[in-house]
Image (cartoon, rainbow, N blue to C red; front, side):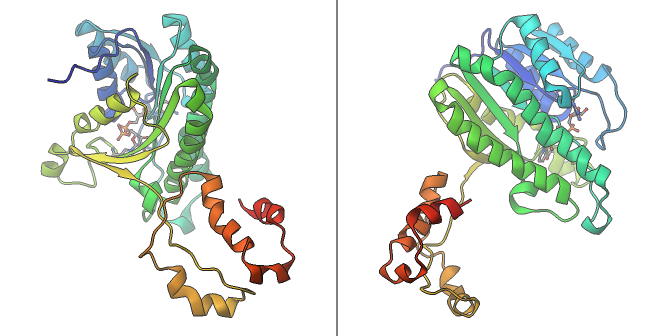
Length: 315
Ligand code: NAI
């Protein structure tokens, strides 16, 4: 039997832990010995209202089970205050689960600035604020485990969720770069796209399906990714109902089109879209390799394009 993954004395911040997925993460980390900061602003799914009871209830649940936890009621927009709660209460920060979330679903033509901005502030800005505040402490301790909560809506798009999709995909980009910046300091960052029964999904799925999609089925992957023995970083996972999958970017082998024109692109479009010989770049330099190989083609000389110019043009 494999030894239980222990989090004894690890200090874990979970945002939006007053309900849904966050609550179950909090209970399980605490059960495994972690000291947990249960953050929740106590808002409705749409971000309205404010209620300390959400975080308090979960802290009481943890304490009743013999665990250690403290409540924090700040918005993730004030991420530094949440990290301060961890430092003041427990003296360090080991694990950060960026989980808080809101929805403002509306078809794109009807989307207001407020719908866009709120979803940005809670998901993207919130994760930024928390993670930046925690970062240097993790760096100095040479230990950190960070989770970004993305979504299938971000990875693949979803009707009526332009704001949410944009922010959920932004968290994948953030995670990818933090994985690279954190590697040498043993700070690992991964993103998950969960599906779970919560107030966010209870209106869009039938009860018998929701029963099979309990948040409890998502927690084990997060525990694994946050454990000190785990080296995984910079990855994206889809998880729900006990099914786990790793997601990566795939590109076609690509086509070099000498003296490229719009007409030649049209002519070659099938070849451009041919995924029969796929590549899986894992870094920006690796990604640019395709462009660089074109730069080195003899027929390219006529463009007077230097490799340095091509590299500078790459995003
Ligand atoms: P939930 O609505 O039950 O939990 C979200 C929690 O975040 C709530 O307790 C809320 O009060 C809190 N919160 C909202 N704004 C906050 C703020 N500014 N500061 C602090 N706390 C705040 O939803 P659920 O389903 O547990 O979602 C958790 C995360 O998983 C979210 O990021 C969500 O977008 C993501 N997700 C969930 C899916 C699902 O199937 N349930 C699917 C894909 C992603």
